[in-house]
Length: 450
Image 1 (cartoon, rainbow, N blue to C red):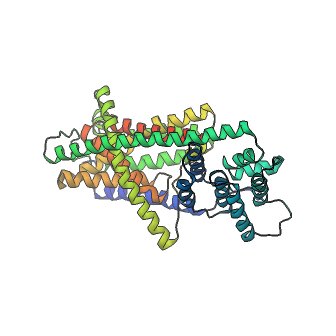
Image 2 (cartoon, rainbow, N blue to C red):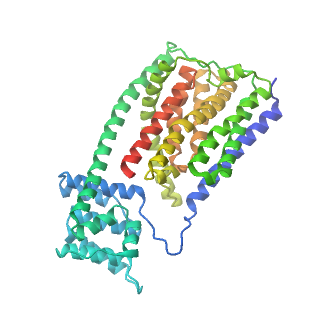
């Protein structure tokens, strides 16, 4: 016997306490205002910048303005920077005269006594010069830097338009068109993956329910709370290392991921041989090429589930906004590094496409999922798989930094990895699916924001 009711209860208490603490810290982080210097200029969110690029790119490709105006209205700007961004987009798509009218309304609302030129003043000067066909003088020094910081892409676009800098304007127009084409290309990728994944999901579900699909994971009883204890230790070690090594940035993340695997000695210390541990966790020998190809299939199965998760996230986000006025856009610290150097981007890929898939699959689909399937095995396959996949996937999503509202999306992704783990027994196919998903996401973000 590897555990008793006391150790089982203690392990559950430790895991649930750790998860609750991480979720609470995440919630507090989303509510706290970012630390800024007194003279720091607020900047547009990346989603707003991307929307501006796509709308301008569509206009450059000949999409009629009347089809783009509803897209501009759908931006629903709130902050001053967002409203100025909409003015700049309108100056390009609708015309500078419409932008002037919008600015006059904005000036009436924002009238103040500041003796220093404000961001609104600078944008107004450039837009008025653009509307009058008069070549504007470019802002200099701190005024230009503030405009570019507050309005990434759109600030430089307005400067180039108003000063008739054709070289810079052509470069920015090229960026806008590329952003639109990248989105269209990836939309085609996801559409194809969705159809393939939906077909694969139907086949797997039908064959599984009819008993014609072989499940290579075999739940067993007798390990007690050992793997739950191991998972709890992994959480403590991983997040502890993340705090200690946080100053090392992306290198610290790599060390935290791989350093946390030291907890895999715990089952051996509790009396389970290493060979049995590797087999239990899906780290046994398998056909690499076959598992690699099936990992791609598992990835495609994740796409239809992601759509379901996205719908749930939108519903939850709308309900929280309506009832509690809580609003949180999905974000991730890695997005801040997508526009960095080639070395930084390489490190991002190493963390997102190697370290995270390997270590997180071992922890969640290896350790935690194995424990859950073992203790629920008597419930029957459907109930045991459903409970194990759902619980482990929600925990996986909850401790990620994307935010509370994004939990259904990450949970849906994790459920697909659980299907791969259940179907293949080995962790290779979930690791491949996890790595492919992260690689596609990072590549998309790099091409759009880098």
